[in-house]
Length: 326
Ligand code: BTN
Image 1 (spheres, rainbow, N blue to C red):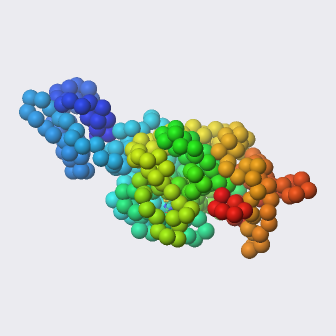
Image 2 (image 1 turned 60 degrees about the vertical axis):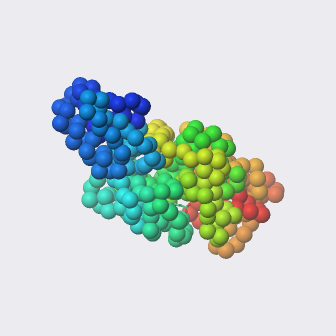
Image 3 (image 1 turned 135 degrees about the vertical axis):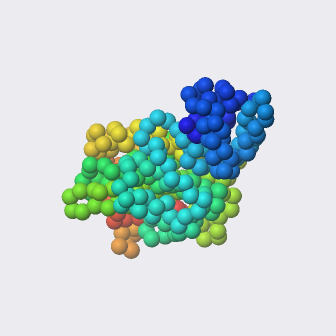
């Protein structure tokens, strides 16, 4: 209800009377006043004028649960949201929620991470207010070896969302880095709890550089943000809501099929490596191969100079461009 009130306030530039709100939502004016009060406590500047009603004054780029829910689709991904001003890592928060039995589709978002984790034990720089740092809890009935495909599903949903909302030329660097202009704009860290034959839960952690304008020296040649590439800022809440809807659609198809055949073509249309030479680094040994595409398990199909094909699996290798990051 709070999110719906916020939505109405945002959409309406003029005042909305307490009476109209109470009719619209079928609750008393006192109840409306309480929700308005809660929104004010969350930091929204809402003007209340006698005989006129309520008006939202500023529309800052917030990512509170109410802000995201006020834009959300009706589905189950992101139906429940836990918001933090600051936390060590949203993957860590979701791990704890998962252990506490929280539901499939729970999303944790934060303005800032103090211990953001990247793949391969790296840190993920997550400064305040400049990005989307979020993690999703999933409880699929899948075999543990199918889990890596969920990351591919998330990468396509992410690429699709970014393309739709920014109109940038968004690409995927195999397996799941999102790149724009050959620089990384977003990464995914999937973690899971499983035993030999079943998954208890999966955590899909996503970091997106949205409004970041400067990066530390060690990554400035390989990292970028939507604001740098687009030259303007976008609404983070809208991005999160759209991602939830896109991910839900692709993920449900994936659960139905059990593999990535339905999304292979779309993934390859984003794949920056396709048809290019890539450097495959495995156990510190490097080899150059041409990337052909992915198979229905999300493995990269590569070809040597004699045209002999083989597949590489994301857990065992790292792939680079032959001169650069891509
Ligand atoms: C990568 O190395 O490319 C993956 C980066 C994943 C970062 C996100 S930010 C939200 C979530 N919480 C974390 O600690 N990591 C992921």
